[in-house]
Length: 291
Image (cartoon, rainbow, N blue to C red; front, side, top):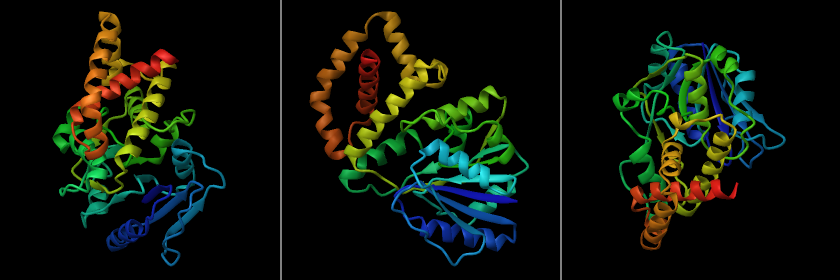
């Protein structure tokens, strides 16, 4: 019936594993929970649970290879992927997915963030997530592929075997974008439902900035290798528009001037998310120029 797959890297998944197990057990369905620790210091959180497996990678395989490995060892038809830093706040979370199993080959439940602002050192990730990632089901359904996120989704094993995560992308970031494109190119529809998980793993502002830059390197690599086109990325569309208009230098110079004013508050307090988006464009252009 259902395999719940959780890639783990430096995160304690004890509470989530036990909540998934409680919910699935209460439904009386055939299920398994598989955690794959990608050569990190994380430890098996639930040795006493039935239908639970903890797998260790001897070396770090990265996000894509780890996900593909989880798909290969899963025994059920329906595979539910949850990121390790998700929290289940809905007691009917598993039930909601089971109810929709026959509705689509791929189902996306969505992601939310805590309502109460965290301390300022974590607020950039929180502000960004609330602004750009936690759309309602109606908002996500308007752009079903562009709003797809791998942190909380269900797909059949057949779909994931036929459309594996691209493990040639080693750098962090934009796996969601590439996988969404693969589904679109394969003619596989995505059903968005109201079944959110809470993204609890908020990084420090400085860490999130560095991960964002890593993600831009990954995006540029995908773009250079023609794995991603302008149709799948606002940054790429803007980049191509600026090049065509021959105003790239002027725009980047203007952003650089604003950076002196806004960046300290972005780094310290997570403010000015709108300008953070402009900085992402500047960083992407600089990466492209150096490549």
